[in-house]
Length: 425
Ligand code: AMP
Ligand code: GLY
Image (cartoon, rainbow, N blue to C red; front, side):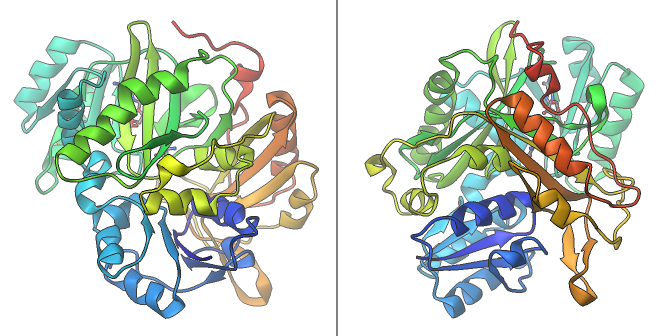
């Protein structure tokens, strides 16, 4: 099989890494990729803001499957263009990707499908925001309606800060905000593959959204993740499929916009039960790094089955015992404007740590094969082991060998889970 993976992050590197290990894959291409992806796939330039460019590249490479990583091109319709040109494509149409692209749309789908989620008000003015704040009380949850790379959400007890965020979102062209009730309880990310009808869940993971240890500081795209979740109820996955993902997939199909690809359910296990925090229309980053680290079933035909409507025929997925932990190394000043263009060293030493490997996110190759930083999240270091403690120790051993001036990472990824400190209210 010849496959093209679209995207530039560590999520795409994880996909490429898994596909490269699959003996069914004869040719692996990526666009635009990064320095790490270039070591495992042939990389090609691609303008991710032009959804019509991908079919040309796919045709030139004569691939059998295109896997779209990021939400931006999906919301712009890259999967529609690829399918119209006859390519099997793993990724939803623009219409179905609105599940992520508009929080208001997602709320509407959930209401129709009877999916449990936070109560919410879609607001077009500050006066409406004030009314919603009065109804829900503190802590205040304010979300930009559109795509914001994980940074459009403010959760704060400070009403002035919450109002300020709402004002900024509303000031954008066509700006709308969603104000929600606060959800307590631990968060879970569950990815479910779907061909529009059949739903195949992967293993759950937990993401660390805040930039600093102890869940302090602003939200980021994600600073680390681990899987499995030793504290989660045994029936969690079956429950999420039955009450959340299957009804959502069915609702989108009934609306005439079937969802093909991966539904990412971001969930809170609250004192009042399971609630959806958000949907994404793609694999999560960095959770994909740990979920794929544990998948034993070769990935290519699984993604092809989803892309071509054959998930019902797929054998049960097989998983490795043990655990995986990933730690993101971020550039100076991330999640603000990151400092880029710095040389990354120690990658070879880190890769030699037993049970660890380094996935690249914002990196590119400079002269003399030097790797330099080119984005906010620069690397995603993965450790696998018999349990969370071992996976965690291996990931951090490798992290400690990477040298990137000014960079930062969280030191508490998977720590509370390892110590058995997470409880479901
Ligand atoms: P989102 O972009 O909707 O996933 O939100 C980003 C992060 O903000 C989530 O992972 C949560 O940590 C937090 N968050 C979002 N919505 C809520 C909510 N209703 N209650 C509490 N925390 C939330
Ligand atoms: N890990 C969060 C995201 O991918 O949106």
